[in-house]
Every structure is written in C-alpha cells, then in structure tokens.
Length: 294
Image (cartoon, rainbow, N blue to C red; front, side, top):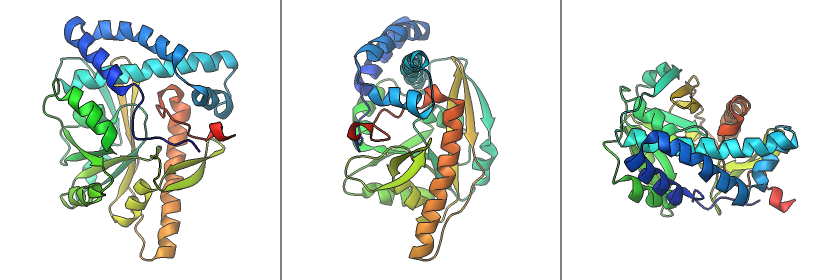
C-alpha cells in the first residue's frame, strides 16, 4: 500500500501564498484567490485516490465526484487561511459551536485526544483557551519543520504546543511528560508514515491501514481517551466535537491487543460518522486504501 512520507503536499507553497495575500490584501481576497488555487490543484494534482474515495467508497456519481474533489481542495485551502488568520491574531469574527467540550474539562488529570485530518484542530485548540489544560499536538517532524518556519513570522502566542515525531523516539518521552503534567495530547489516527507499524481495519467497507502508535499509546498510557474533530461548517463558523472519554488500559499482552482493537473500532465508528457528515472535509491526501497496488 502506498504510504505517506510525513509531508503535506503543497504545504509550504500553500502557506506562502495565503500568508502573503492575507497580509497585503485581506482575508476576503485570500478566499477569492483560493478559487483559482483550488482549480490548479484540481486540474494538475494526482488525485486518483480522491476520486476513488468519492466514487467507490461513498458511491457518488462521476459528475458529483469531480465536483467533490474540487470542493475538498477549496475547503482545505480555507482551513489553511483560517489557521493563519487566527494564529496571527488578525481580528476575524469566527463563531464556534462546542459539542462535548465539557468532556475535556472533566479530564482533570490529562488525557489523549485522537482526531483525524478533518477540519482544523489548531483552530479548535486556539479557541478553547479557557481549558484548564495545556494542549500538545503531535505531528511528524518533517511537516512540523517546513511549516513552522513560515508561521513563526506571523504567529502570536499559541494556546498549544507541538510535539514533533522523530526517528529517535524522543516524542514518546515528550508525550509521557505532557500527560504527567496533566496535559491533553492530540494525535491523528488516520495516517501513517512509511516504515512505521500499522493496523489493518475496514473503513467505509474497504480494508485500509492506520497508524499503530496512537492506538497503542491510548492503551498503554492508562489515561482517558476521547475522539475529537473541529469541522468548518461555513466560512466563519466551526463546530467542535468530542466524545465521552474512555479508559482502555489493560494489564497483560493478550488483553492489550484486545484493547487496541477496541479503541481502533471505536475510533473508526466515529471517523465514519464524521466522514458521512462532512465528506469534503477529510483532508487525507494519500492512498488510504492502497488502490495503486490494485
């Protein structure tokens, strides 16, 4: 199966364009420019797996599939713009529905939040600044370094910290430290990097590979786990979702594998629900079902 290499395709170019446009022309102009940027990616980017997602997994018609691929690129661009606007402190009247935020407040001793490449978690964490926890977002080091250099020039104080995933596994120590300090650790459960251990499960009726690490940590940490999403519903409105926390910790290896399967099953149930609710908001730009090998 074709896997991801820890880099968001077009990330630096996209951020650069949006930062320049927002800074000199404003957010409205950035949204307008995005129509053409999204069109460029729609025409020239390799998107066979995106077509497969809409056509074969969601059952869309050929025309609806093509339109949905474009909408997905456009929604992704909007999320990048919103991220830059909010983190740089530019005044924008974002509104935000909170559905399950009380679960996070009740995780007084810290916990794990598993999300997906849907919507925009950085915006959620920035707007949830009154939580009694520090939020730590775990991401691949390659992606972190490329984007960090661009955002450092415009970003004000963040309501979250980033834990980069590195080959030396130092991120494991950082994650445990964050949990011991009663922090909330955010990880994505829908994308793995080449060479890493994976789990296989059915997603939307087709076998796919998901990263092993988030689900193993969810069991081994002994901390409560919740699944979180922050979805963009209109140009100025986001909707945050968090499920009721659950502890999956087990005492022996046999029970541990069973617990990993349990958290994976629970995660996929929530993921599929959100995909069906927001099909054009799943920004998982890689060959999720391995169609290139078929």
